[in-house]
Image (cartoon, rainbow, N blue to C red):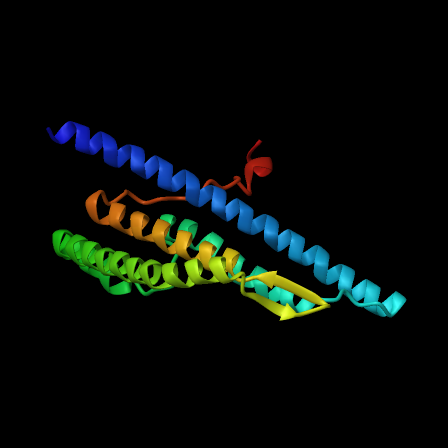
Length: 186
């Protein structure tokens, strides 16, 4: 009976990790697009005296998207800004207690992210139905609902990732890195 549950948790873990990596990649592409837009605005403003109308709004919109698209991968990789010094010290002498505290922190984090998702859902629905927008009419406008949807989906995915860390704490998750000294060794 436990085997199907473990199989389901593993499948959910793979799916959640894959979505987090994909969202991070989309966030990175948005960063690159933002770099192009800001550079275009600087060149157009300096050389042609024709700035990109709506640059401020695009930057504002993009920053929120970038943060919430990349947040799940940050959670997945255990890269949230926090102090683990106490848990690291405690894990050398009392590993079970440190694991219990770590799981408790992840459970509280999952609950917090679930509350964020719960709170933002009605805002998303309202913005989608009312077609509310931000920006300056006639210059640049964009709907609010994509931002609210990104926040909701990110919070929901973070909830799942934190919950997975409670149920099935992963061993050290290490990013794939290129060997910086590979050429020296060959």
